[in-house]
Image (tube, rainbow, N blue to C red; front, side, top):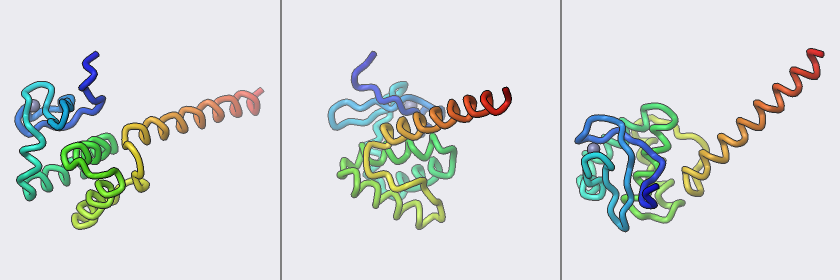
Amino acid sequence: MNPNASTLYIHCPKCNGSTLILREGSDVVCAACRFDYVSFSSDSPAFESYLVARMRGSAFEKLAAIALHQWVTRLPPADASAAIRAMAGRHGISLPDPASGDPVLRAAAIFGTVVVLLVLGLVLAAVLGS
Ligand SMILES: [Zn+2]
């Protein structure tokens, strides 16, 4: 597996499809067409409307937008989180719990918790049903 690949897919403005985000040193590009997200982010209004469109999408798109924003701005996680929350707020979008760490790790932690709760629920249902 490419060590530079993230596990996040996002809507690429150039491919017009959902593609893997690649991180190469300080570069952040589309894995399919090498669209340059760092250059894109220097055009603040266009980048903001792009991120806002993603944040209006699914929970996974929100997560990808938050991560992409952090990677291209290279702000400390707390500052990046505050910045994208302010941006979301300006557009009337509410984001999930404050992201104080790596959004990918947070998503994994949330996913793990949901799986544990589901398993507990199934065990409980089996016990109660017998
Ligand atoms: Zn692309």
